[in-house]
Length: 210
Image (cartoon, rainbow, N blue to C red; front, top):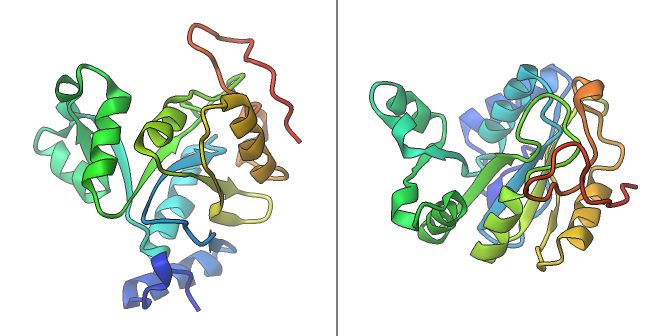
């Protein structure tokens, strides 16, 4: 039985995508969402190969997954394709020049949405995660869905949720616990699950990962 968004009836397309994932060894997972909106912290994202299980999971589950980028990238004809693949333009000018506030406006506008964010911000190794996704969820008042691309267990999807409290170190410890044992496509590119403070590069704030 396919795992679907809000336990909705599977469609022929979702059944086909589920079959294709399982045929290639992947299992789609979706922890029951606490509500119809959340920010998905997608990790570890260490290779372009992550795209295929990720898009397969979207089609299999029917989760209303969207990603965001600055509005200037959505000009035709490329913009049509970007929207078709789930892209949403953010006009920072309407949010006082703040990208996070622009995303928060989108979350509040939609009745159902998962805003997917590659939490590391790059496919190469970093010494911490960018924190934009955290503040999107905090300001919008929605949970963070920890979304894994686990090449060891061949699982893709949301494994659990963390409600941001404003105590970023404590909340990151919960995120790290949900990622315990997850294996990246390219393990050498997977860095620690810790928040990078503004202005930090190689040395993040210390948070113990299980």
